[in-house]
Length: 541
Ligand SMILES: *[C@@H]1O[C@H](CO)[C@@H](O)[C@H](O)[C@H]1NC(C)=O
Ligand SMILES: *[C@@H]1O[C@H](CO)[C@@H](O)[C@H](O)[C@H]1NC(C)=O
Ligand SMILES: *[C@@H]1O[C@H](CO)[C@@H](O)[C@H](O)[C@H]1NC(C)=O
Ligand SMILES: *[C@@H]1O[C@H](CO)[C@@H](O)[C@H](O)[C@H]1NC(C)=O
Ligand SMILES: *[C@@H]1O[C@H](CO)[C@@H](O)[C@H](O)[C@H]1NC(C)=O
Ligand SMILES: *[C@@H]1O[C@H](CO)[C@@H](O)[C@H](O)[C@H]1NC(C)=O
Ligand SMILES: *[C@@H]1O[C@H](CO)[C@@H](O)[C@H](O)[C@H]1NC(C)=O
Image (cartoon, rainbow, N blue to C red; front, side, top):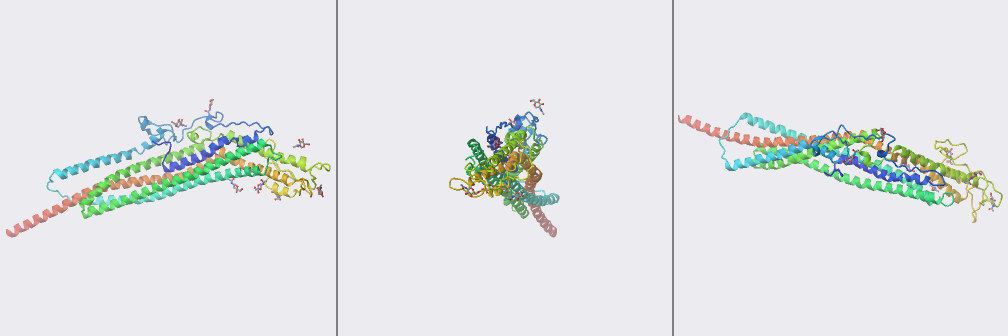
């Protein structure tokens, strides 16, 4: 049982989404230090808590363990002497997979039974053919009519089943593809978000934030964080592309198999009907042999799709349960390492802290250096209107702050400050009116860029960390994609069951009808001969 790498398609889609996001989360669990590192510098005097608690270890906010999809997964477990399995949805538990696979058991048993029974029948027929001389045929008009009726009915059923199966596989393929596209799109938007943050930090780095105002160790931390975010984005992107490609290959393969099954069964039913009506006995027997094996295969396929259908349903319910019980420990948490909400909040407040501190740095430069009028010879010959302060979006306690009048916002400080830049002489002294040298301006805009980037990406990072983003994704999958996946996988196994049962019964009818037809012909022949004889007798008498 390959329960570590499920091949089932919609399940894989679901699991893929888990894995994709877990790739991000894993990078981010370390990435709690994203802002940690930046902030825990002595210069800012912020003590980093560094608490990276997982849900499972978190005793504060509810430590109850939740069984996912408990009701749905309450099934008999063949590995445990057919007692009921109670572990819930847990893809790392072989008992879960055994109990799901067990739901297909009736169909596997039918396939086996059919295969063996048919083999025995064929054997008996062969023995009878070879050894026994057949007695005189008995012909019954009713049996003949009945076998013809059933033959027609089952052939029609087989055709309906094939059409149903064909339609179902098309819709299933589309539904799965839509789900996959949604998951991939979510992954891509995460990658974009991460790249945004990373670019912000990289730009800041290249413009020499370190030179004067930002200490080297802070800059190193920004670098580290940047590298981490970049690698998270890279991993996520590669995994997405690779998994998407793999899943598409599997999906197309399944689609092809189902189309072939539908076509072959349709052809089999039609040919069998034709041959038995025409009384082509040898061809009918060849078809019976082919049909014998195909019916068994189709029943097994049907069982597999039933298992798939159940596993998909379980996964959907499990996702919903997980979304609805954010603080409980579940089997999903073993796959997705979400940081607990408190830690995520911590991260957010640390990113706020960095923003607050960086804005503070800019403003100190403005008030203590640019905006003072030193005696001539001191300073860099700054003159002209005062540079407006940068608006700090946070108070010192990290609550939101309204800008005071005369302050510029983070979003357009770069443009506003451009008007205060002077031209410098070779010795880096202003030769025209202005209060910022170009070098200062560059560094200050770099600071603004980083602050602005962090300010806007803080909530995004927090959502990734505490799995809000993932919960939203799961909610959409559960609400919008699961019903289709469930419905169409059901269509497929019903279609397969219909086709295999109809072909199985029509296969029996071919034989019966061919026999009745032969008997009828024979009886007619005998009757005709008898009639002629009696006529001849009459004319003689
Ligand atoms: C969590 O665990 C602690 C002890 O480990 C226990 O006192 C508390 O009742 C538990 N809370 C819940 C919601 O189960
Ligand atoms: C990334 O940045 C671009 C432009 O700067 C913006 O339009 C987009 O919404 C950002 N994406 C995310 C996920 O933040
Ligand atoms: C899932 O199954 C594994 C393997 O049996 C087990 O170690 C783990 O505790 C289970 N998880 C939950 C949440 O029951
Ligand atoms: C700016 O000036 C204030 C008041 O003079 C002083 O307390 C502060 O330390 C100065 N900051 C810097 C960075 O020089
Ligand atoms: C900056 O933004 C403020 C408010 O959004 C606006 O009033 C001001 O004109 C902007 N300045 C520039 C230079 O864009
Ligand atoms: C200082 O700036 C003024 C303009 O504000 C300019 O006229 C003067 O030449 C500058 N002095 C030096 C030494 O560059
Ligand atoms: C700041 O960011 C803007 C765009 O967001 C960019 O055009 C500019 O070059 C950046 N400046 C610095 C100094 O990083």
